[in-house]
Image (cartoon, rainbow, N blue to C red):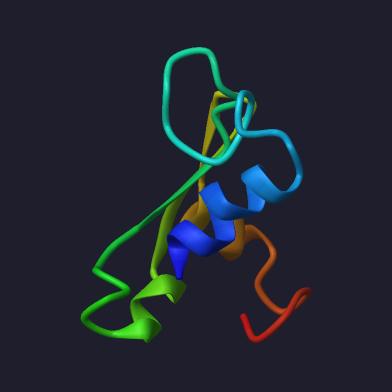
Length: 73
């Protein structure tokens, strides 16, 4: 599922040189979860870090700041 969403998506958009996999020189957008989605799909909700344009964001800290303002948190 992750490959379909990332690499195969980049291939279909003719953008695999810039996105779709973790390699030197590619745009470093990444989500780090605590757990394995193959073991339990609910593990994808255990987001620990989000990297956007190479900058890491602590998702737990952000969610605490937004508590009661967004989504189910």
